[in-house]
View (cartoon, rainbow, N blue to C red):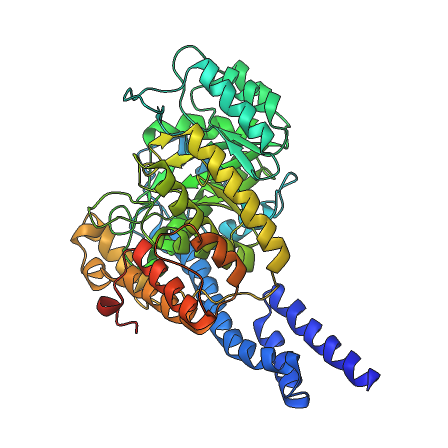
Length: 512
């Protein structure tokens, strides 16, 4: 009996170990063995459920591999529109990186072997990595929201220092402290960075674009700082970013390479095609950074964004957390690059309590599916236009509570994200380029409802399995209309509340 019990534990632990290392078919093999040999055991019952999920996870991983492959194809077959930048062209020509023999590319293609060489050169770890599900501050909103006042202004030196002091008090809950809000002329960017370092000793991020060459020396060889920079959008370079990108690549220890492509606007409307374009643009920036400074650490800052029903960037949209979880999984499961995504914020401005609720829900959705470093999730509101110290404090308090419950109830199972497949990714991106933007492309019209359908699928799946019941209690306990009764009724209320907050009508989506 003792030997039999040890074998169950060994097989089950082997399955979980394989699952957490993203070897889903290997995990399925162990789960099958547990279910077949010990069908009446608790492990056998769980194993039967996990077998189905292993197939869904394997399919999802195949899609991420396809996205990674197609992103590299975009760089080598379509190219990036950099021909009007003498600086970028010179860098790549000196490195013999450009594929001049490719006559079918729309822009400037790179040689396949050069792409692989540079991506292999990029470090796969970050010395001050805060780990998975590390939530933090970011985005540098232009306005500081002040209680009882209508003045929309940046923060003063005194207000900025107070925010930094608060961040130091919540260093147990903050995974990354990015520059939290824009400041007025009473304090410079480098002075803001010095205040951040004074109060917060862990991973920090700033933008050095507007700093002097002397100022940027402050960050040299510092492992606990990321320099946030960008260069590519809509498969083309941004002229205003060329000089600062090259300078950052030459001088900073760690780069956060940012891409904020928006579905249906600056990028494709389908989740898979959007991820592919974002990934291609960040990979190109990594390749360029390695060309300028071989071995520089590059954090994949692909941040796919979605438009709300009003046609503007909307952090309240349910697609925001799930597409960013998918971006994180692409890197955690396939590329191995350290990554930083976005989520946990809200489009709400004038109702702090509701904004805190919505941010809490978004953070826990992200935590449920798993992310790496997650910016913009503490203190920001109004779709990253405003920062509130009051919301920041409440967000940190909620994060402490959620992490406490997570540590108590967490398991090592990976939850399928059911990323929808798009078989027209490359042709769709080519069409978008040919027609001058996503809004004019048939590919966009054919995928106009893809995010809603994806979210409806996740709601349907969440009704079948409640993975983190106590964690969901923390998400929902403050939502009006949800009261704990019996488990079955509570699970129904839970799903209904998720739909209500995410503005998804089960009748419209076909979810019963």
